[in-house]
Every structure is written in structure tokens, then in C-alpha cells.
Length: 514
Image: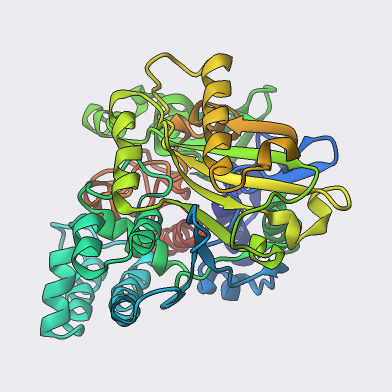
């Protein structure tokens, strides 16, 4: 095996493997190095209790770009590819939401929801077009950048005068005001607000939560899927495509540093002391760990280092896993409904109140939750007759005031269990084992600074032209030969794969122009 490559990818998360697969498909000799024992980054399935397995961090597939599947000729194995959301009610009068259709709404809210969904889908489709290409640089006279910028303006105008004004009005707004103006049903408003704030350090009243709602919708028309076998199925499929195209993947190979010679990245050194040389180094790690740890700030300009240091990326979501000896009972739900995605957010003010303590370094006493029972669709995840509960729990700030010790973790785990028990009274007696991953645990296990899924907040000042920071939005870093391909680069996090695909295209285009 040669120790010199055309490209070395640091990290075998989904974006890293997509980037590596596309570079290898173009005939490049590619090495992908992963610190963990398995590929996938935060998209992995692992056992958390004897006989019980779970998608450890990301547990549902929202945003995978169809263009990625097409480019890689990839067919995925879904346990379900269009999961509904159920907004839970303590009275049993739940709402079931799938796209623009909801059971249990008044006629006025049902009509308004169809209008709202159609409008938001139009805006999300516009956004989606620009998720799948490098954003144009501002203030330059490069023909490609000017053409892309002009096309963006033209596409916004194509919405029509009314929709264009509405889009420009909404893009920086908070989701709270929009939902309060349009709907009466509190469960509907709570559930829609959750989709705008999930995984962020934002509440419904925070500016730009319309943007985060559109970003989530832009991935794949808002459809929610569950992978058969958990998220490792997606990751292993991507690894196979990368290998089939000629890439080499090595696990248990943590990268210690990017080797810099004469002002350019020339390879990497692993923690085991192995050195690999390459023409290009592509980091799937977050921007902060890439620049501050792998590269060393002395190799880049001070102003750029300062901007990277100031990226807001403190996670605010925990992950709860429960090993159950059977399904709990929820008033008003039959067994089939447990296969859907359940939302605990009784109203939009509940979501905002849940966020308030996080502003001051405290956890929510009444958290917002997305609860799933993945073993109902996929029996391989639990012993026969038993089940797994997997839930996202907000808000759990990374910078908890008293620190994330065992006592704090256990206390918040109990808070999460108590919250679900409000709807499922027999849940505690069903629990055989449990696990809670705080943002600090997510940082440690998945090597994500701050435990933030998106490698940085998705807000207007950290989006598109300025993601991860101004001057680095087109994947190429100020250090020659170094590129980013992870969630910290455009367009952002979620399992959409666009960042990996866009980075590969940028690298190939750069080499062609050289």
C-alpha cells in the first residue's frame, strides 16, 4: 500500500465517505482515516444494553439529498421511508401529522396548514437548490461566483412579487410569530416549532428559526425515514460504495495532526505515529477542531483563527435510550402508532419555556422531546418481545452551570423519563436499562466540539456565504491543500450529504483549474 495519496479524508462520517467516494470515482487515490472502530461518525448503531441496540446519536433520516444517492448509485434499505409525527396529548387527543395532512384539526387550521405547507415547501425547494452547490463568494469578480449570485437573485424573483416579499420577510424571523398568527391548535404549533429548533441553541422566539425550519424541510421534502438495522446501515452502505470505487478506509486510526510544509498541507500524522502524504487533506471534523487542534493556529492568519474560535457551536440536545421489556401504554394510541415519531411539546409556549433555562446554563425541568420506538419496525434492535426507546431531549446545555458529572446526568435522565411517564404511566416498570448521552458525552464519543450536531448553529450569520466563517465558505481553507467537507461547512448538519458532495466537486474543480 502506498503512503502517498491524492486525497486523505480525516473522519469516516457520512460526509467524509461521500466526499471520498466521489473523489475515488473520479480516479483519485483516496485514504479515509477514522478514529473509531466503526465508520459512520454520529450515524452508527451500537449496543447500549445486553441485547439492545440503537442508533446512538442520529436516529432518524430526514435530509439525505437525492442527488447524493444518484451520484453514488446508492439504494438504501429503509424500515420505513415516510414516518408520521404524533403530537402527544395527555388527554389522548393526539394529532397525527404527515406533510400537509393532519388528523384532528379544525377545518380552519386544516386549510391554513395546507397553505402554510405549500408556501414553506416552495421556499424550501428554492433553498434546496443552493444546498447542493458551493455558495458564491461576495465582493469578487470571478465569473462563476457572479453567475451563481445572479442566479440566486433570479430564482428569488421567480417566486413572484408576493412570494418574494414574503420569503425575504420570513427568512430572518422567528417561527413563534408565524405560527401564532396562522394557527389556533396548540399541539400543532408546538410540533411545528419543535421542527424549527431541534438540535439547536434556539427557542421558537429566537430570530432565524424560520430558516432552520426551512432547512429541515429542504432536505427531502420533509420526509422522515428509519433505516433497517439503524444508522450503521447507511454508513456501511456509504463505506461499501467508497471501497468499490477504490478508496481505502482504515478505522481505529485517529489523526493527531495535519502535516504542514512550506505553507501547505502535505499529509497527516496519526496518533500511532504513522505519516501519510497527500496532495490534498480534507477534514470531516468540525472547523474548530480542524484549525485549533489538527492544523495549529500558527499556520493560518490571526483574524481567521479568531473567526473560527468564535463559531457558536455549543450543543443543547441530549439523547435518551431505554431498554424496555415491552411497549408502555399511551392513552389514545394503538400499537401501530408506536412506529411513528412522537413529539412532546403541548404548545409553543411550552417549547419556549423549555428553552429559557438553557440560556443560563441549566437544563429544562419540562423538556421538549422527540420519542421513537425503532424496534417496532426493526426487530433486530431488541430481544424478541422487547423494545428500544430512543429520544432526543431538549434542552440540555453543553455548558451546564454545575458541569456534567454523573449526578447531573442521572438527574436529567430522570427528568426525561418523568416527562414521558406523563403520557405513558407504566413506562418506569418497563425499563430494564437506560442510557443518557449529554452534549458533553456526544463531544467525547463522536468527537464533535461542543456536542453540536451541526458543527455550528444554523443562523443567518453562520449560513451559506459565511459558513463556517467569512472567507471559507467554498470548502477550501486559507492553508493551501486543506479543505473541509463536514457539517461545519455549507450547507450544514443533518444527514443530507450535501457538504461532502459539494466539497468533492470543489476539490476536483480546483485541480482541473490548477
